[in-house]
Image (cartoon, rainbow, N blue to C red):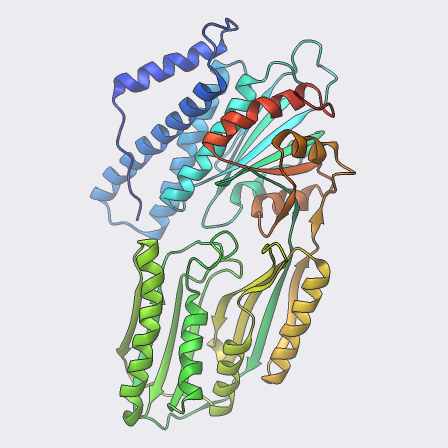
Length: 487
């Protein structure tokens, strides 16, 4: 459910608008400072979303809310931002190269004497998946806008704003290859502390599957287990912050199996994407009547663990165990045992950390299904080392084999890495920001852009509204003189 920003008074909007129409002036007395620009851009972006969401709220009062309407509302939010970016650009002599329902491309012509200088492109995602993610993404958008507005000595500058929707790189995937041509590419991501990334983890999607045997249930008490929480959350961005719904129910069943609490498994489903926390998982089991009380106690302990997560997050969740109609068929005892054993032993979460406590390899159970008499468990694995990725996949394959379940690597992408020695952009910004480049476990938009142009001279800049004010002067200095160290 979306929460709304307080709506700013019309007089405030008018004052800020006048400030930005003044931005186009070359008079130094009227030009905003970097701090003023970042803060004003951010507040104006918030205002646009507030206005869009108030309009959505009014519409929802008249019509029943549906998933389709929610998706349309997200598009309206981005279109509102896109319209504002277009108006802002025109007021500041910045060209609007392209506007779509999932991305905006702005371009500022080279300053006098810099027509042949290196080009720079700033990129950032804008997300409306949650209040926090929206606010975070607007911070980096404000920084990108300020980079274009404040730059005075530069080659051609571009800013690309792409929509991230439902945890996926919607805008980056839709962006045309023509916008990925240039000398230097800086992708912004919101971080609490300044960071620079020159690599993105290797990634593999794995499927564990097995044809299932069905039989008539021997027990009499059927229950439906449902765990539902916050959708569209990345296990790599929010590592360990949320319980994995599939793994939680799997661990509950495993604890009962190891304690001789007898049950039969009828179905197990959940998840929509391998690289997101499954927001919902559901299992139907059948218990013998004598074990109902013991199983209920195990469920209550599992519930308490999940409750701790969401109490800390201050977000709602649903975790229930309710009696349901006895199914006609259940999965065979042997197949159930193998499924539960796999769920318990398969890697989910951190696999390995470096000596500096940096997570080097991690995996996520994203989807499960027992439909059509076939068990399917889908897993995503990421690693900042190709060797570690091979090691993880070998363990996955071995674990599946021990549980008599088929293993298959569906897709894979190698580690992307741009060394400082080969990229003046990486080495130059590392010096300017006084930070050592490291690896990102995930950046879906950057991965999408690299899939279109693997030769991008790209670096990921992790910043926030406050730090960007301090860092932008150094970055703009570097843009004016690439390769030269700034004072």
